[in-house]
Image 1 (cartoon, one colour):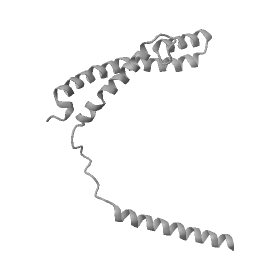
Image 2 (cartoon, rainbow, N blue to C red; image 1 turned 120 degrees about the vertical axis):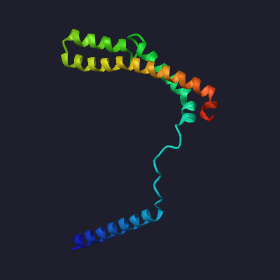
Image 3 (cartoon, rainbow, N blue to C red; image 1 turned 60 degrees about the vertical axis):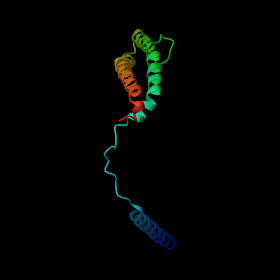
Image 4 (cartoon, rainbow, N blue to C red; image 1 turned 90 degrees about the vertical axis):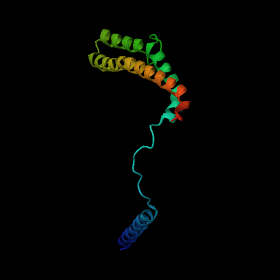
Length: 132
């Protein structure tokens, strides 16, 4: 009997807590915002642009580095060649897919870098995005 009584008391306690939490949530609920942005975020992007540019430069430098640099295309190419020469076809296939993706990052990041330079020029001409 004691285990049944404990179970009933636990269920009543949980029900009470859930009911109180639901009522509290209903009391403090505010109307949901419309979700529409109030602006285009130009000022925030102008503020972050220099750090974004540094990050892109750092990543591109790593990708273009030689085989001694972790994360470089050359190092991954070397790993693919090593797997191929060792006859590890599954490893070679996996690494080759990673290599294809890593190579595709370079033109994407270069395009972002070019776009970001245009953004930085715009920011300079428009008071860092606060000029209307």
